[in-house]
Length: 278
Ligand SMILES: NC(=O)c1ccc[n+]([C@@H]2O[C@H](COP(=O)([O-])OP(=O)(O)OC[C@H]3O[C@@H](n4cnc5c(N)ncnc54)[C@H](OP(=O)(O)O)[C@@H]3O)[C@@H](O)[C@H]2O)c1
Image (tube, rainbow, N blue to C red):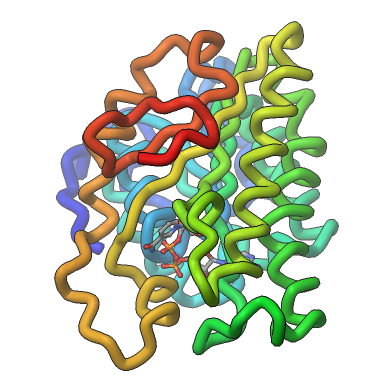
């Protein structure tokens, strides 16, 4: 990940420093308890799209809470994102585990607010991608636990914080959710389920001021994409940074107006109704 340290050296805030959750409340008190900086929680923030989004949001002045299972990689990314001068809180763990999700939401509680939850962490499942008829069912359980149950559980847990800010939930989807591509059935089914969860929650939460959308980021040159095409040269796929114009446009939209939409971050038209093929 390439991050230009736009705000490096900024004074009067917590430029370039990581802080543990246990010290956050002291910092808030020291700043007069006035929490106006927006807070984003991004799962799967150690690499790929999650890391790119973390850097982008930090550059937009968001404090960010990040997770991933590999603690070392997560801390390295967090250190890079800190260069933007906002607070970066890395919490290592598996999003499929309830106690880890509680820690993520507790970190936002300690920061005093949550404006944006991005359910980005995802499992591709076994590779080479098996035909659905041969799909190992224990592996399917794991894919569904990480890609469907965990995002829903995190949305449930984070809802009070999101209601308080009129916040937004972004569930990261995939074209595999609607493609029916051979081999992609397990992962694709999980993303189709996540899309329906997004749309249903958008309708259910409309009166509670919380917006829910799906975003299909498009093909990106990441570890997950390489795993889907083992041994293949994927250098023609763009890096996740290619989606940044979309994110900049998306964050400027009226949250209540976009709730229930499904976006395609690399399509010619970013905003298309759910289920409509390109
Ligand atoms: N790349 C593409 O072409 C593409 C296309 C369409 C959609 N997407 C979607 O875009 C999102 C990001 O994918 P990516 O390509 O950026 O993948 P990636 O580079 O493999 O990154 C995945 C991130 O999620 C974390 N993660 C995975 N399982 C986790 C778990 N159980 N708990 C916590 N963190 C976990 C990983 O860290 P650890 O491994 O250390 O946990 C890593 O930080 C996913 O939702 C994916 O389905 C990707």
